[in-house]
Amino acid sequence: MSRALRRTSLWVLLLVAAQTSAAQSVGAAQSTVPLTLVKAGRLLDPRTGNVLAPAAVLIEGDKIKQVGATAPTDAPAGARIIDLGTATLLPGLIDGHTHLLMDIVVPPEPEMQRRLNPLFAPAQLLAIVESPTKRAFIGAQSAREDLESGITTVRNLGHSGIDGDTELRDAINAGHIPGPRILASGRKLITRGSYLQNLNPALADAILEQEFLLIDGADRAREAVRRNVFQSVDVIKVTADENLTVAELRAVIEEAHRQHLKVAVHAGDTVSIQTAIDAGADSIEHGNDATAEQLRLMRTKGIFVDLTPTFYDDGYLKIAQPIIVISPAYLAVRANRAARNNERYDQLVQRVIKSGVKVATGSDMCWFSPGKTRGQASVAVFVNLHKAGMPALDVIRSVTVNAAEMLGWSDRIGTIEPGKFADLVAVGSDPIADITELERVRFVMKDGQVVRNDYAAP
Image 1 (cartoon, one colour):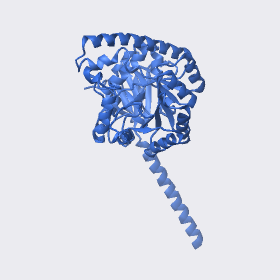
Image 2 (image 1 turned 90 degrees about the vertical axis):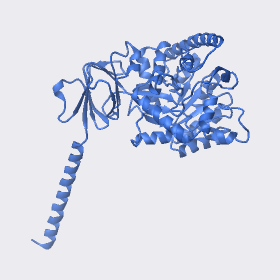
Image 3 (image 1 turned 180 degrees about the horizontal axis):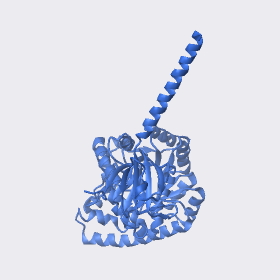
Image 4 (image 1 turned 135 degrees about the vertical axis):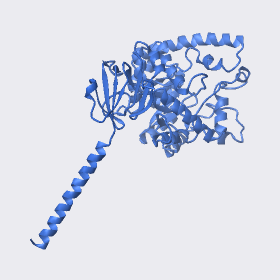
């Protein structure tokens, strides 16, 4: 055999050996990917309302591999089996509007009477001037409590300092702390005076810049988006009020879309809602005074309404009465106000249902709720939407499949389907028959990892 032929043969042998070794390495790596089989009595598909019974979900690593019915002997060899008995499986819940780094304690009645924006502004100012490190710890606790209640994804829309929510997101993604996956917005874009008024003139701009980016003309609006992009945000949040022009908001949206970011617009009154519609917002947050015609326009343009029935049924008293003294006169005022607000919100929900607009739900949670964790308080807000007249299945859709679409993550979350993240929750009985089952989540899984399992043997 010639020297050249021997050399060629040697290279062929080395190449075959290398390919065989690589194939064996790939096979070994694949074999070490953990398999988990979750079995339950029922599985609800929120998109269709169909129920699979019994149900089994095969999970490979952090993704769902197969969904179907199975007998106890059908588990793949080596798979970990989690048997939830007669429980009902749902996709992980999605909070479309929250504030993990705020924990407002309701002030006493005399303090309420002395301030502009008295429920929110004093606590907001205190959060701004306190240590960012303290806020980070509050955010970490809130994130863990959300996850334990079955909220596996949140969209955090402001009130987090300059980088509080982006850093919290990254810490969770890195596995340093437990929490839901976060779409972070960084600082909220506002016109001057939207939240805090009458600040010390010598310090006002420095204070505001810790929490907000000011819109003052189209050029500054675009700059504000870019400054948030510098902090690696996932979404842009804007507060629309009577001072914000369509041209300014359109500039925000054009710049955000150029950066492949969606824009969520806080808008409660009809003027602000119309500004958001005309400018082309991706979602309108709250939308409390939306007219039938505005909802029709939102449906036509594909704009989501993200409902936040946080204080429905006088949620104020539920968080205030256990911790502060409230005079009989103010209690009477609150009772009358609650009745009017409930009636208005019931009417809004009926307009929303009739319009066919896309609906998601957010807790808007930033309040200290005595006796409840952050997650428990947030899920209770979802249930409020049913109290206001929305069918239970539609409420569930609004915090699963619809919310996933609003976030632009329909390919990742929102339903229990192959290829999506293994985010699962389980409740004891049928949540369509009793929507309050969402407040009694007994099993939580995120990314194929068990966060909570009350069904496990002690």
